[in-house]
Length: 349
Image 1: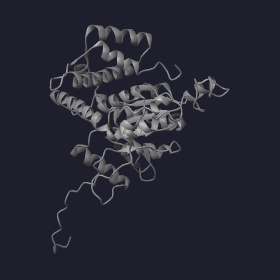
Image 2: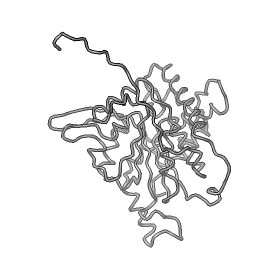
Image 3: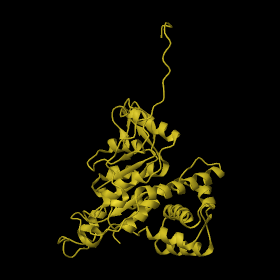
Image 4: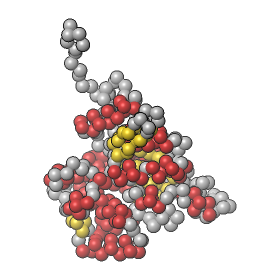
């Protein structure tokens, strides 16, 4: 400042990767349908809701997600580190190199989730930028907090307004939610469900609004684990194996979007003419989706989310069936059918 000394040039430094306690996907017993859905969600960055009784493995599946996601790019490292620096959570160990995984408690306030406070600091959805926001016990969060998530899920950003501050924070996060089918957790099990079933299930699940549910791409049931699965010695796929397929699928998406001169990198973010360009359907697929749209009374938002999901399913299929070849750009009937299988008319069905 006084011109008497030259400041030392700062050196870039990444925070050393720490050993995490996240379980490997091979440790999850059974739940093959849930594992498949988790891989699709990771490959395309899609939002997912898991419904099942206590102890079925919902939280464990969610904690496995970071182990199959690709590493942050250099640009994403800077974006994530800057947000954490604003929040005061960036240490002197270096820039954040791991994809964020935020799992706030359901008692968290709306400002802590969305952002705010006296200095309009970024909330959990911004701290989960380029990463995952896991909301366990989904219906137990405050209704106003869940409704506040709707706009950031669509736009990928959030405007925090206070008397002295108006700040727009990025919030491109992947929502993974988990919930019990009812308050007691055993709806549908005649041996364990409470005496208020099924009314208690409807009341509990009604805490999630239709518009919020409409923004979730995959809704899956996670049933109780069978004893035969717990005692099975059959080796399951490891997180590293699944992560390789997820990475290849994301590389396909990146190359496709770059050819369209778009800065989008994952299918879950495709909109408008970009989505129309990447999700062309053949005639049987068009007929199936048209019939499902009418019978299931799907909204325009749900229609487009099925197209995005079908695109990701097709990309994963191309990896398994045509190694080192260009993936087919045409969505077929089986891609749309699987995408539709992950969407429910309502949580009560």
